[in-house]
Length: 423
Ligand SMILES: Cc1cc2nc3c(=O)[nH]c(=O)nc-3n(C[C@H](O)[C@H](O)[C@H](O)COP(=O)(O)OP(=O)(O)OC[C@H]3O[C@@H](n4cnc5c(N)ncnc54)[C@H](O)[C@@H]3O)c2cc1C
Image (cartoon, rainbow, N blue to C red; front, side, top):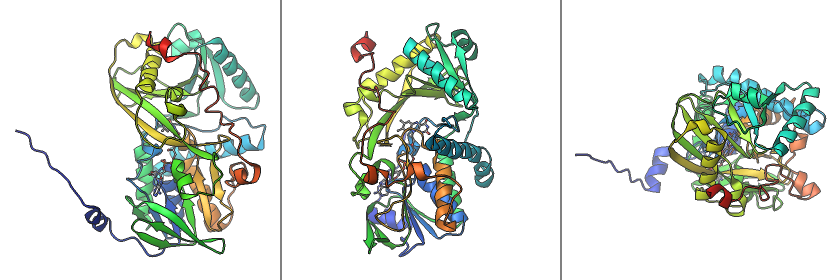
């Protein structure tokens, strides 16, 4: 005989269990993903009185639904933007290997595996050769692997693959451990963390933030960090339309198999990607082009059969020697994609005291820990050594919105149709 326990809490019982919201706080952080928990942790560590509010559980947005791939550097150093990305992501990668592991007493299951960006056809191969040459000339540590070298690294890789770009400064981690570790770290420095607390809007007076209105009451504050990712336009209606839009991403997970993938992988201009977890399961995501409207501007976290089929087909194409493997799980999550593919990090001018940390596109784990630190430095010290100007959240209001996001380029004209995949 089996028994089940039912937990049926009313919202009043839930809020009683969570404890009351503070009436005021020096800083309120909105959003309990990698960006929000990092900001809360870094601020609390610097002595600020912080309250973090999250509408669901900690790590239940994109941060709890991604593939866990992370890395640092790798961008071209020719432009100011490239140098700023390089500095921030390199420091992020260092932080998750050193400071945060030590301070939060966890290794987040971080594995420094390196990654391959695989060429399946001539066009991708030419692109990879060109991109490796360009960044190698600038001193970035990447190399090209031809087909046989790729198969030396991944023996199950298909004979048809032309080669790959091999990046050493990357790996993968377990996102829940990092995000919950940062939330717990913030609590230990005195921050209040309130899950199941939905923000309805911000209060301002004379162009300055004065409070955060939630479904459980208002918190008075003069400093707010909005780390609400895909949902940011809901809280900030004056953000220009199209500056940041939601983008639904989907992932499948297989049953555990023998260790076959010593590195993480991407392909098709990184629109598809995956890795093998420490428990042996293969994770593969991508194929937004088979979703409704390429997954853009959708707010439901539902999986679509065509995207699942695309991912399963890709695993079988890249690694045919895998044989028959069952897919055991799948999920969807909402990313915040920006019009130019860069995040929004820094003060938001229409309201003094309001800062944005959102729009990390498909790579928040290479940014969130360090941008939380940069914002904490700005708020506490009035300055940060990082150049945040390319990520100025006011750029779209100032320059207009033109959709140039590289992660969406070519999604629609990918040569493989669903009919071809089904054959
Ligand atoms: C399928 C998929 C695969 C991905 N793979 C990778 C990968 O391998 N590597 C990588 O680096 N990145 C990856 N990403 C992207 C990565 O997950 C994001 O860039 C990152 O998690 C963004 O973190 P965040 O804290 O900004 O946002 P989120 O984690 O989305 O956090 C925002 C939080 O704000 C909360 N919120 C929203 N509105 C309100 C409100 N009104 N009141 C209170 N709270 C609110 C949400 O509930 C949410 O928890 C992937 C994403 C997806 C979906």
